[in-house]
Length: 89
Image (cartoon, rainbow, N blue to C red; front, side):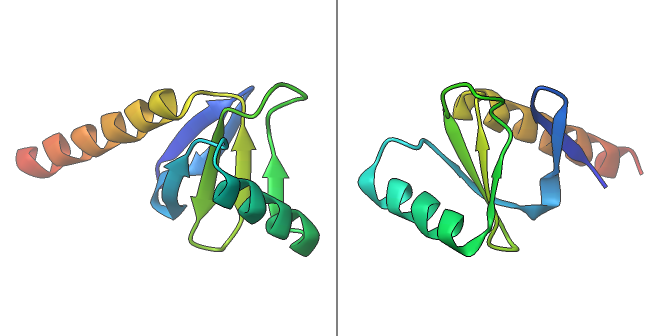
């Protein structure tokens, strides 16, 4: 199982991530509020401004203070490593 650092020592399982988005649009703000009402929000921003929203396959919404591009790069880095390992076998 591979984990991605999403800031401040917090990790998320890479295979559980469905999408990674910016929190600026109105639909995403509504999605966050609906998840808050349903108790499905995990806020790992440590009181800082939310810069990315991670949606998981279990319908949890994770709020992070790390830029989406940074997290995407970490995800892509794992994907590239996995492909290299598959080619070596």
